Image (cartoon, rainbow, N blue to C red; front, top):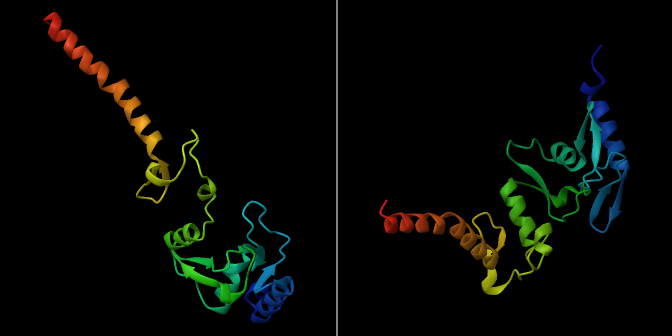
Length: 165
């Protein structure tokens, strides 16, 4: 007997069940999954015996396979949305760039470093990975490292020269 997961009819019925569990929120189609990941907000559905994110399943069924190294990203930034018009393929880097441009990165909300210096103007340093850093803290850290590692060695050499060792 063939597995029920290989039946095209089963897939159609299951997709109808998945879409029946959706509701509209503006232009978004939100899946009300009982398996919704509470930590990150993605809707999870059961498909052919395993759990998969709902937006990925809808993209696969409506558009086609997702190539290796690609992510199904949301234009609307709503992780529960399964509206095919709101989904696009992108790389991890493209997805992160999109998040930064839209101000969705948690650290972007911070206006000051842990020591209270502002992340703004001349004090703002953006590293090669796009992370914001405090120039003042970076300078203080570099000076402390120098004091601990280079000045004592230089003093030891000077002392040895003066003592004639």
